[in-house]
Length: 91
Image 1: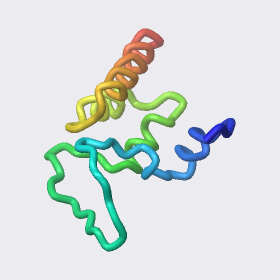
Image 2: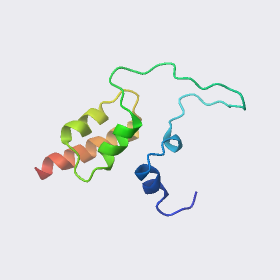
Image 3: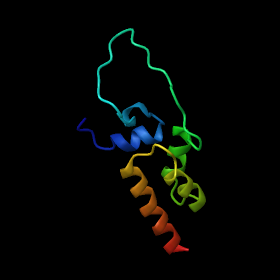
Image 4: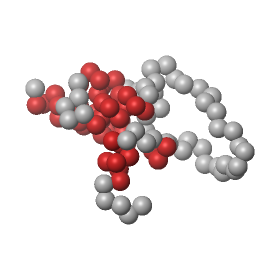
């Protein structure tokens, strides 16, 4: 997108479609239906995810719960765990 600050804008405004993870490549066409098929136990909402991870000093328990969320991308899990380690060292 070549726009400075776009990721921060997306996070601040709770715009989540940009970050959806593709589990199985394919195509979608006008009229196709996209439906929730499964929601794993322990899943978190995108609003909760953004509010916790965007906090300056989130509660470590909240951050740990996000890191354990089922279906979370490996990269996000690693990022959250690194931040959790940093927060624990600061206390």
